[in-house]
Length: 355
Image (tube, rainbow, N blue to C red; front, side, top):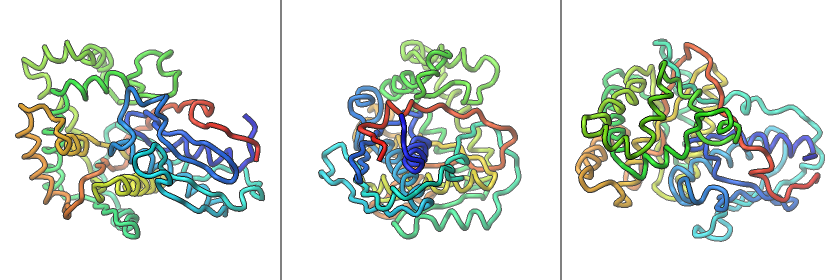
């Protein structure tokens, strides 16, 4: 695929954005000078979060942010229309690019190379206040609240809610089967370029084999009878409990709020990575809050979910109409992380030309 330097950088920047379970649920189409960001119904509609789910909106917002930052970095104008076909369609945004033809710079923006996920343990060193203050300012212009939590007592309270949400997750067939579809165990599976490569999960020795064992819901259901969900939730929440800091992103519980939260999440994540800090996303609380709103939590677990929602309100300073969109564990890494692969350009970019 032959592209101008700017378009090539724009596409790589878009491709580098984070998404739930590395699902990369969006695609781009290009009819000069309009770039269209949409949900890829044909590719992901049957196995991952739907078009209007919070997780997908976060991914779309993150991709949107990288596109706009790439344009800004290159001095290219970008006129944006959100949901041009209405919120019921699969189109998130149309972006009219102005002056892109004159860009000859072939250097990739620094923020693209910086952002990554690191699930390894972090050092105890505190996050500098100047960095915390900076990321807390990122959402102020678009109504997204960013809160950096560094108090050990508050971190412990949040970790408890992560554990509760994880216990619900490991007892929910639908969520478990989504995870099963996203895991990539073999080199051939990893080669696809999407999903969760188990080598990126920082598992202990034998962890991959155990994860393969419990990825089957029938087995997990049997193991839950002896409390496996409690053990897995405790393991899942331990890194949060030991985190030097947590970053909570909250926004309006709406489609625009989801997109805006994704933009701020990607900006904060890239910024912290560029400053030498590691980030590890935890979506489990947000997911259970959304599932509770949609009456999709198993009835036997609804009481726990409602208690969690009540506890989260003061923990994250949620205002009326707001919800927690994402929680990031933040700290200085002890070791380098293996980066996830991405789908080939041909999989996610449609109708591209050399313009």
